[in-house]
Amino acid sequence: MLKFSMSYKLSHCFIALSVAVLINACAGNNALHTAGPERWPHGAMAVTANPHATAAAIMMLEQGGHAVDAAIAAHLVLGLVEPQSSGIGGGGFMLVYSHDSRTLVFHDGRETAPASAGADLFMLDGEVMNFLRAWQSGKAIGTPGAVALYKQAHELHGRLPWIDLFQPAIDLANNGFAVSPRLAAFLPRLQSISRLDENPGSKEYFYPDGVPLTVGFLRKNPAYATTLHRIAQEGPSAFYEGAIAQKIAQVAQAEPDGGTLTEADLAAYEAKIRPVTCGAFAEQKICAASPPSSGAAQIMIAQLYEQLRTETSSRIFDYVDAQRLAYADRDHYFGDPDFIKIPLQELLDPGYIQTRAQERFAPGDLPRHGDPSVSLGYQASALYGVDTTVEASGTTHLSIVDKEGNAVSFTATVEAPFGSGRWVEGFLLNNEMTDFAREVPQAGPPPANAIQGGKRPRSSMSPTMVLNRDGELVMVTGSPGGNSIPAYVSKSILGVMAWNLSPEEAVGFPNVIARGQKVRVEIGVDQGVEIASELKAGGYQVEEREGENSGIHMILVTDDGLVGAADKRREGTVRLAK
Image 1 (tube, rainbow, N blue to C red):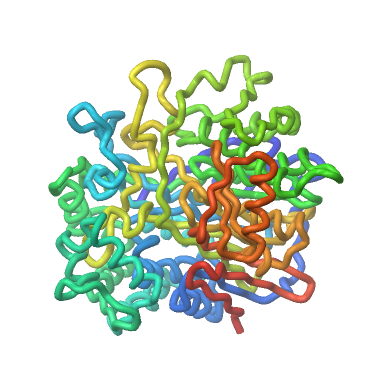
Image 2 (cartoon, rainbow, N blue to C red; image 1 turned 90 degrees about the vertical axis):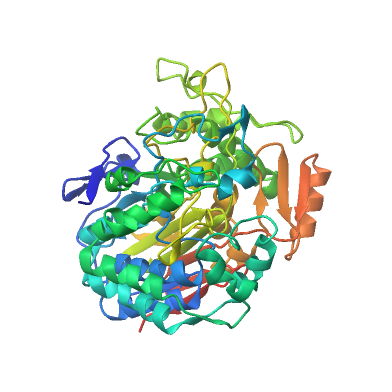
């Protein structure tokens, strides 16, 4: 039986779901307005990481489906054509906007640690497993959450029959799809570092006759079609119980480096509804997923940037320092709110943001977290030890607006490319447990993101929307990219809202990632070299990169209609529905 869990936290900047009624919890002049809606005049649009997925979403929209219907259909296709990034063996975060009520819901389908997992999960002979070995191990596999997330979101928002959402992916899996350049490019590179070409199932699928799939190869996946048919007919119980669940547990426990995931862990999985975090910026309101997502960092970066800006300061320096401050706080305080105390309201308090901006670090210094303890009565920073999380980037993002103005921002993942590389009935299992802090100090408090049984690892995934003062939709955005996601997504928001760029210009702008002491700058696109030079001249430690793994997919609502942008660094497409 699929279980739903609702988390409630009503405060001055949170929106939560109470039974079947969405409650607006923001107060004051920035409150979301819930007056009767006008007819949505802007049309419908889907922006996803692959043309097949975009086509599936458009099919649902043109049949009168909700944005959630389109998102589920698109993601089921992405699990087939883009298995390196996400799939039903992983999880995700879905942010849903309802035009009629001007409200938002955050669906948390993040993977959970096996019940038996502890801080020593990745310890081997007294040492912590290196990332490459941990990534390929059964220990890295958490309970997948995508299928439960689908069902929860569909029951609350869906318009089309559940079974209809699966048909585009089933048809494509049976008929075959042409292998894309991005998928084909991964396979030769992974042969030297992963077990994808050795594991049962994955070696035959991705390396037929021992040779990596090539661009244009017609790849069929009848096993995936069968799995989806069962879920479509029987519901999520076909995935979380019975033969598929048994096979998932067996594959996770298999050597080498077998894990502890059990059928009981799968049967116990719960998709959750959590608060949406909102904060004012530039006469608008940024709304994002709350922890274990890093969506709230979008508000922190934007508001810190606003505090740091002056008429004479450098836009790039201000943006970099806003990131450095926000990342340091995110790394220290964010984790699974069911297991730890997160002073999120205090971190987003305007007084703390103003104080934190005054703690701007010198360009060469290592940024440290702040302490929003003034109103708490205890020292929040002392609760947690130093974060040691290392996060990979096997993730996707899609943005959708339907014909009634409802919207979805959905970021989904299997963690590293191709997840754990372990294959079950046509799909790959995640390696999300490596998103925890694998190394825990012997003395002192553990990191906020330390491993515990049943816990969800902190995620950089940040599905985000921007609303106006009346609660009307302005922007839908998000990106894959591991620990760089907060930087990628903030660039898309600031690019449009503060730098007067078009969506396409904002997405194409050089990626600048300022987590920790170094600042990574993408120099392989226009303006990248100039930005890197400016930062070097300002004393920052710059790491130049030819490319960055962003996949920003954005929709902007304008008076002239919807304007979409797909990141040219990947294979995304933009389509309007008829």
